Length: 268
Image (cartoon, rainbow, N blue to C red; front, side, top):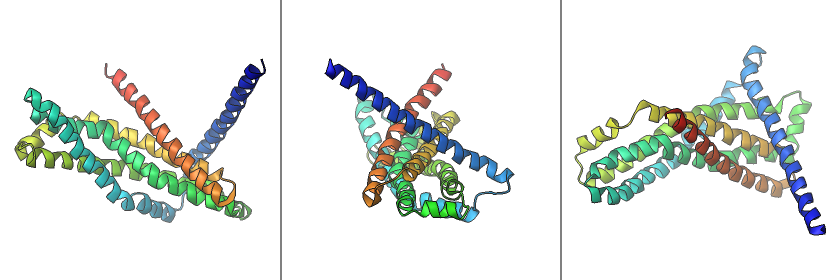
């Protein structure tokens, strides 16, 4: 009997704690989105210098890692699919398989995961360090809203740069598939390109780009939330950074599943 009561107690405590976390996350996200929209109308727009600085950090300095991850993913995808398709004499369709897979799914998801690991962790570490050293309280003392000053530029920058990085990832992945198809599978270069574009619709590209906006919001909002809730000094910063990356990864995969299901059933 005591074990059953203990079980119910643990379930109740877990539910209560995660409900509080969810409510706090929604409240913070609403405040960030509010300042994104209302800042222009209240005469307190976001500092453009901060936005451009974040765009360079999040976008330009992430091109290399996104390029290599998606490039070698395209190479692997082309080699693995060629093994199966060659048994049916359909090796040429490696081109379309790589292009569609990258634009609809792999490009946006892999790019988001890479950025979550690099940028999401950096957002949490920056805000978390300011939190434990009481710099957030110092901003509030100077009548500076930390949400508008620190978090809004990060969300805006990531909403702009992640779709751009996704496009770069799509192209680099298709380039990797192209090299395998032309130099390893002996497919004519022009024929490979024509086949890639023949089966690639605009809706495939729009689907992937729309996902990247959702992923960008997830990475920025989770990073900001984990950062502002950091406590416990340097150890707490490390723990918050780890939680930020793990939660972002999980939410990105879940959001991708939901969006894929939405697009799938809406086209039936």
